[in-house]
Image (cartoon, rainbow, N blue to C red; front, side):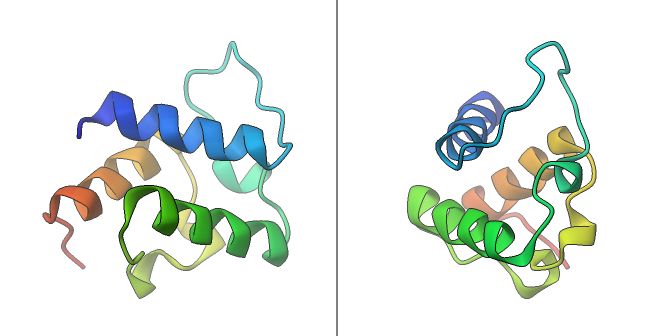
Length: 85
């Protein structure tokens, strides 16, 4: 698994949730698009299902979802087992 695959999967999850992200924006503030707790929980559950991981408690805050690219890096580190608190 690499960064590109994680990014594509996360974008697909967002798309399947019906959230439209500006295609011209390579990096965006994720918590501007996922604004309510139900959407956030759905997003996290789908991440766990798609990557067969458990998202660490430290990442279960909407405030941790600033830069989309940084979040992709973080999820990749969880997937490959290098995530550190």
